[in-house]
Length: 227
Image (cartoon, rainbow, N blue to C red; front, side, top):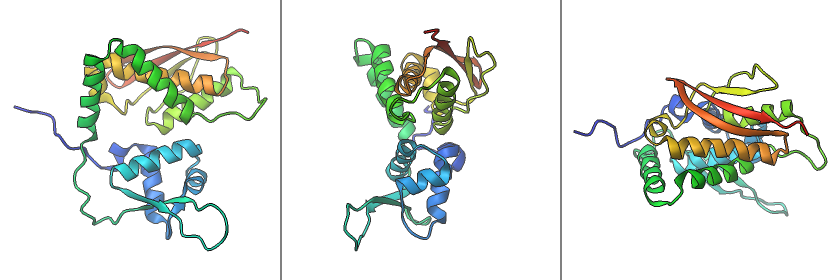
């Protein structure tokens, strides 16, 4: 007998704190909002705000369209919440994620390396890129990484040891899938952290990720470069 539901839960808790804040903002707005407006109102990086907005569109919770403009200039892409009573239907992204994860694990010759590479690309995309010639030290690099992890729903804790930094991650947004396919999902998360740190040009690397050292705790081990 099948024990797992095939459809996703669409509560605010299931969306994650940052995505729920974006959705609440759209629902409260009296007109469609652009990415920069959402980013400013939620204190998110623009790429992160766009990531959450596009996911809300895919989930049927928001709509995206080109802004009507009467003035010259390129029109913006704007977002608005769908009607709360609209029959969007159930979503099954957890099932889709499980299917894709098993595909990677079962069919790719090097699933761990493929997951790390994909995570690195997404980490670079989601990172708050520094301005040209801006020097980012280890502390600021870890802060920027923690911000991305928080936006993605990992609930990162405080780093206690600056010389051997470890970020406690107290929530896994992909916990059910990660528990079954750690090699793929946890490698994806490790690559994500590596990509963020590389993009912000911090003298820090993500060395390893220890998953589920406690039921709701993973540990991200970082290495600070002395150069």
